[in-house]
Length: 120
Image (cartoon, rainbow, N blue to C red):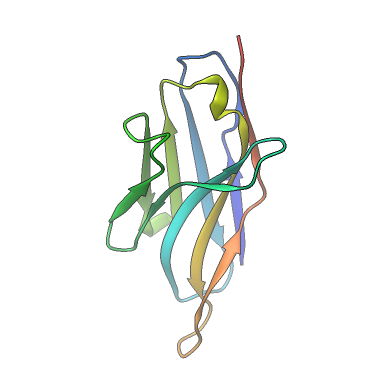
């Protein structure tokens, strides 16, 4: 199982970016999917998650500015980021709870990070 993230880059304050993450490989189900970020010198923190049923959860710091969505047919999760601030600069990683076979537990898988830099 692999998670491939893309869409990071350099953006000015107030700008927007859209991150994408696609799960591939052999599995039978995906439960929740989400985005996390880690800024230099800080611990990794949750940005947003979305369950298989579509329930969304956001960090207070991004509520109202970021929108998480998923396309179950494509095994993908997206993060639309708007009104970006300097403090949003971080490496963003996607995560998914994936069941590889029926009868097995869901396990957490992580994609490689993608750098988001907000700078004027």
